[in-house]
Structure formats: structure tokens, C-alpha cells
Length: 517
View (tube, rainbow, N blue to C red):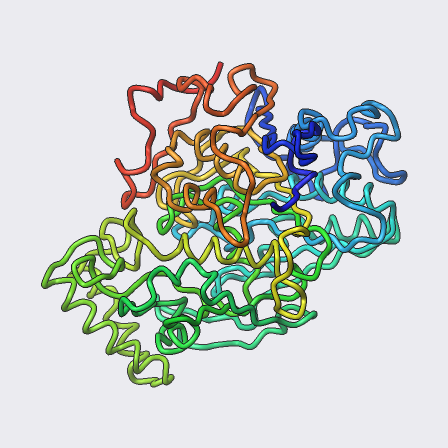
């Protein structure tokens, strides 16, 4: 059995192992739900443990307070809380470690507007995590912050909106400490009228990439021999299927997050069109080095063994035949086809329906692909070596999560949904437990989400040693303190799922009465 000692209670069972009762903290801020506006987002109180030279801010920063309180609620270094010696992440991070921070940096803006605060992790959450990671390092080691945004996203604008350069400059000036920021993508796609017209090479991870072959340990092995044709991130369908075919399932992963001693995930609390929710487990798409190695859906309708559409119809068959033919030309860079596709895509949406009201591209509860890919990536993060081999489950990667749920997203996530003010920060050391708690907090049923339910299953490379019934939560609210399964249902938020998941993922409606008081 693997050991996740920093994730669980301090008590031991009769076998000398840590009890499989992961603790997850939820802190809900009172008053107005808003992020501080002034990077680098200084704390508004003089906390005794903070590194010398880090100034106090002039505006209220309830986000920083919430992150700090989540650490206290978890009981981290509880003997020293309130004193200069308090070092909450010291059991996770040792001086000299390489710490990789992965926020949600999916896009520089909402798909339909220029809004962004409910799309990506806010820099104020990242700032608080950086401060306590640096405190644990005692100035010795390395902090890298990175992600692989959508291929058409503008990384520099994401960095600017998050306020990350100001955080980087603060540490260079006051601590003589460099925080590295990396765009893990190897290419940026330029899109016009919904069609990718140009590919710009990027440097990618400065540490390079590694190929990891899960093969029969991949969850896609359950589909081997069933004639599936996977669609990846773009038009090159044969490339995706060259990496995922019978008995062969492999991924290209950025080396830095795999080689780091500690991985801290800082996701956004959001719904997702292809797997219901996106938090820690789904967020690991951001550690890949080539998104076209990632299956996103299986071509076709359910009757033909696919999950691209939600039903069989002659209209969808016609759409698929036309689109796949066009994409086969687009992958060859044919400029004429690109021009025609740009000019006709809007008309095609009028005929076949747009993505806001028609299920296509696996954007529904029947997607049987993305959750498999996501859980594969999590096994790779926890157990892969920097050379691409898989190591013993006795030594999984040290892992921690802080979820930004201050202003969350519901509806058509992950980039086209609606802002939902929640004012919460959720933290813990077990990604499955944290995502399960967030799922219930959103008013969803983990049993209806294969991403969560299957993450609890036994596997050669387990993602958790907990169960849904063993998770304990601690909070500044009484309703969220105790066993997760004993939460009163009236204390939950009612997130609106993506329309392709509506009515398929929610807890029973008569059991969800409103928000906590």
C-alpha cells in the first residue's frame, strides 16, 4: 500500500500505517466576495511567520487570510501556530527541494467576453501559496510556476492578468530568490474565424519532455479491441491514435513537474463540458507536452461505439463526414481549405447548431474518454520517474492542493461559463479527496462522475488509499466540519452544470436547499 503521510491524519492504524482518513479544509470568507486588485497581493495583516522583507498591503486581502486559515484548519504545524516559528508546509517541503506550482492558466480570457477572474486561478491565491512554500524552503531550493494553457491562449497576457511578474519581482528584490515561470507548451496556434491557420513554435519546458508508456495500466486498455478512433486536440487524428491503440497507451509529459520533489496544484473551482468538473484531477492536462497525445473523445455516436455526439442521427453523420474530410486537408496546411473553412464555419453552425446548445466533440455526460485520460495523467505525476519509467508505489510524489473557489465558474465551463461567487478556499494533500469534497460542495454526486468515482478504485498505481466515506473535512463553518458523508445537504451550493450534463450529475434536488448561513 502506498504511503501519503502528509495527506492524512496523524493517527496510525494497527498495521503501523497512517489511517486512510484524508483531511480537507474549507474556509469560507465572510462579507463581500472579491479578489484584491493590487499585485503582488500583499497580506493585509502582519503575520509573525512571514519571511523578513515581505511588506504588508494597503488593501484588504481576505484571499490570503483564507489560504492561511485553511492551513491552520488542517492542523499543519499546529504547535507553532501564531508564532514566528509556524511553518505549515514543513512536513511537505524540505529546504533544497524543487517545488512545482501548477495553477489553472487555461486562457487569457472568457471565450465570449474579456472577463477572466472566474476563468483562471487568481494571483492572490498563488501569492499566498508561494509565501508558505518559500518559508518551508528556508530560501534553499527552487520554485517553478507553470502550466500548458490552451494552444490559442496568450501566455504573456495570462501572466499579466494574474499579477505573476509582480510576485516574481518581489521575491527577486526582497529575498534574492528567483521564481521561474514556464509555458509548458511547445507550440502556439493562431486562430481566425474558429479555424487554426498558423502554428508558432515555442520553447516548452526548459527541462524537456519525457515519454511515459502506461500500456495495460492505462484506463484506455479497457477499450482495447473495440475499434475506437480517438480524437485529440487538433486535426491530426492518425497521430493521436498512433499513441493509443490496442496494448499501447503513451503520453508525452513535461519533465519539470515530474522531476520536481513537490507538486502543488492550485486549480479553479469550475464545471467542465467534457468531464463534469475540472479541479485537480482534470487539471493535469496542463503537465502534458503535446496535447494531441491526449484522447478527448471517440469519433462517432453511441450506437457506433463513439462519444462524440449524444445520439445517432443522419444530420450528425453528415456533419461528421464533412468535418473530418475538411480536417484531413487542414492538417496538411492547405491554404485554400483553410480559407473556405473560415468563411463557411459560421454558416455550418447555423445548419448544424453551435456549441452553446448542441452536443458535439464529446461535450456531454456520456464522454467516456476524458476521465480516463485525466486519471492516467495523475498516475504518471504520482509515480513516473524523470526518465519515463514508473517507480514503486511506496514513494509517490509529495503533493498538495489549494483550490481557488472565491469566484468560481458554473455552466459552460471551462472557458465559457458564468461566474459564481462562493468565497471559499479548499485545501488538502489528497487530490481525489479534495476533488470529491469540491464535487459535493458544488451540489454534484461523485457517483455520477466517473472522474471521481473511478479515482477511488484499486489499481496497480493507486491515486488514493481513501474512500468517499472516510473523508473528513474541517472548516470555519460547522456544517462543513466532520465526515463528508454527514454534511447537511442544505449547506451546499447549487452549481449549474454544462447543458450536456444537466440532470445527470446533480445530487437529488430535494436534498439541495441552498447555501450555508
